[in-house]
Image: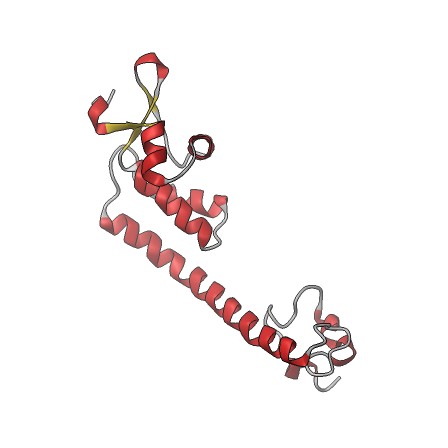
Length: 156
């Protein structure tokens, strides 16, 4: 077993990350962190788990799913702290996904402003963006946020 001083109890890990003990247990069951067992069967975590759990918190705030977080953390080494290069590789992989989310948020911001200015907030009655609900012919969902433009439906 690792040196007790080099590990953290679940309570210490909770204090360091701001997570609840139950959240840490959940992440443990998902394999994001792995505890060893000390005297009295107490969970002991590596100090590197602070960063793993902090990444999970940040990634969730960025909109990543638990499965996406698991996949990224699975690329990190077990048994020792990941290097700066390990973390950089994750950052590089996430950049395109984050860029797509930023684009979606910008489009939402632009269209929302237009709709609020219009006042109707109804795609089936909107004479400005979607007269006669022409966008519905392109499929379900928020067509303009999914990439369609009002000009795509002008010839209808």
